[in-house]
Length: 362
Image (cartoon, one colour):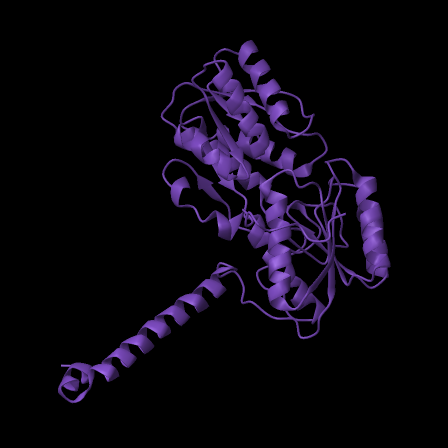
């Protein structure tokens, strides 16, 4: 008999009500604390800035939930942590490096302490990054890699691994034979190349042979691009029963092409959006890799706090790892398919609240 049951004869109903209320409150507080901790999904402890500092960010575009998730993660984590987000800029498209050069220079002129860059191209940024560093700024890389040894730290993902995850989904499919049409994505984007090569390398390891129909890099990453290229590939290669795209918008365009041609085929892609859920559930999309942009944004702020205060940056892979010349952390990726897409916590990992607005965008 425990102490509570032993004391029941001597306790009033009011006492028991108060006790039960306190237990309930304690449980609620514990759940609240756990939810607070969960925003960083256990990767690093959350810190608040000892002294406020200014952070600015420039990303490639805001056409999908990936970059919106990064910006939301940065903005929300900054608000929680005492960091001032002074500017959010958008290059507009892959290849718009001049626009990003101007946006990075603008961050210097408004006195930002940390510049966060999701580059519109892999190469060409080292001189401007070096210039920012010489002015006393710290520069971080987010989402996709950049070819520079002057980056202080990066929060990225292993794009080769993402390609391998997509190939593994095809390998595990019971569908035979396996004939994959490849829509590589835009030219000049390193993440596109890495996913493409990762997919092809892993496909060669499949127990069942995988036939790959290749196409050239180029074009954009919109729905029409995916629709047009998938339609053309399927018309010229009637044996195709899988389509690879490196990014979800292209993937949804490919699904439209499959429907228009009344084909029995499925798509593998990356960067999950809620519009893709029914496509996964009805089998038009075999699998989509989750790219947790919100977590990336939160981690950028947490690492920026540590960098500004001269504290250790835990869990970073050293420079030279993954072919990058700066220390970085690769967020974990998860494959979403029919078995788990209905229960995936989008709001934690990649999709900003519907009512949220991008702050101070230029």
